View 1 (tube, chains in turn yellow, cyan):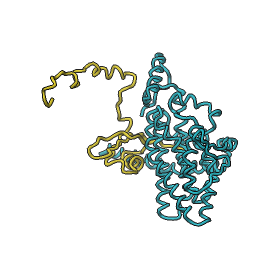
View 2 (spheres, one colour):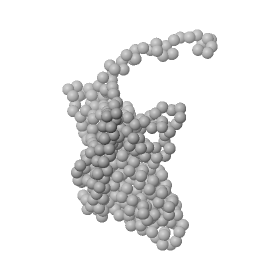
View 3 (cartoon, each protein chain N blue to C red):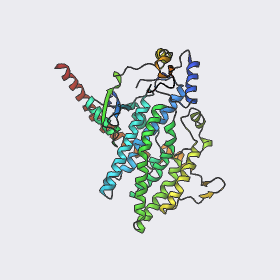
View 4 (cartoon, rainbow over the protein chains, first blue to last red):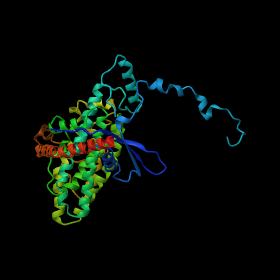
Length: 95
Length: 322
């Protein structure tokens, strides 16, 4: 049985104007255009979106779970990046 | 996205501990996390079987698409069949995050190495069956599937959230169809009762063997893949369905069905487990037909898949030439 394996695409949907595109799943398609059409049929059958992105999965560079701790470590000890780090007297308005 | 690790590396104890901790904290395991091989294998088997059920599940009702009694019913049934194809694809996509290939899963379905739900091996004899499938079969599926929205494996849980939202339409259209028939002639009411008589027990069997005969349940529950035992879900389904049957005006074909005040639940009879075993073994009324139809669809679609891939290749070549 000849089975041509189509590449995998990741699908992102913008649910409404004003919101970001959000990853909803993946699908196989022979090319970008057909990936878009299939994404419409598969992920927006009930008006779930106003805009679609399809991205070849192979184009995504991801951080690895193994290096999770060291990778995100730089932001771990920088509490001074948060507004609550600073003591401001109660009677100073609008800050 | 990317195949997961399956071999426990040298520092496995630490990875296993992290896995256990994530599951215990009700967080989700994601595709690239380390996971025990048996967890991965269990999920692949369960998700693939679930996906296959959605795909094969298009056939019993698809049987009636060209003979729908009205354009309204036809549009509804088409939308439902399209949803089932969609559910199958969400689930195949979830399975692929575990490092298996969709084409390979299709092959395993066609060759009989992977199963699908036994319920789809029963025939649909008339249009009342479409209503009863929506009400009972999709109703049972919802009972099974709602807890899966909290499954410990992220991609499966997310697919189930989408699926459950859509299943509600399936169940309601079925119940509405049956209410319409029940308001019709005596012959139409008999059609409904006949369909209920045929589908009731197979629907109860959809929850799988009773807890004593379900050896993997404990492990799946410990891993938070499963949240309730087969018998708990079956009971929940019976309790939900009895008042719906009363409202509809049909009799559920179980002489042992009676309210148990003490338990606050309905007592019901034992399904015929021999029948379930037979259907699972491939000896149900439609097993051979379901697989041969799926196989023919796959083989007849081969040239389309090839043509689309070839078209994509040529388009890409042309882009390079410019």
